[in-house]
Image 1 (cartoon, rainbow, N blue to C red):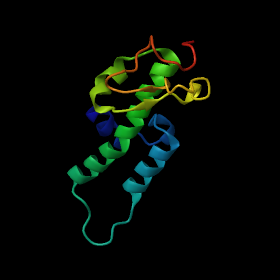
Image 2: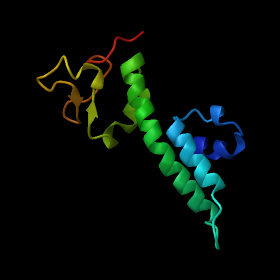
Image 3: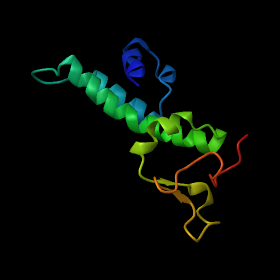
Length: 117
């Protein structure tokens, strides 16, 4: 994660950032905001950019499990994720089987979402 935060300032194009449009907008705002008075220290800027990037990474890691059956990124953050809801199959599973918790973890084998392509 730290490597990606270090790379952002060097990437001039939003398309190179590989983040959601919302995350790109937040990063752009933070990077180009005209502070009145004292500017934040570089470490404060890095902390905010990291805080903006983490939710995007989590969502991306969960999406990769559903779309590709790839769990290595999700497994890295698994203990920090308390709930994943499978919105793909919410209607077909009225018995509330469309969610995952630490006691019922998300895996490539038990996901209810679309098949791995």
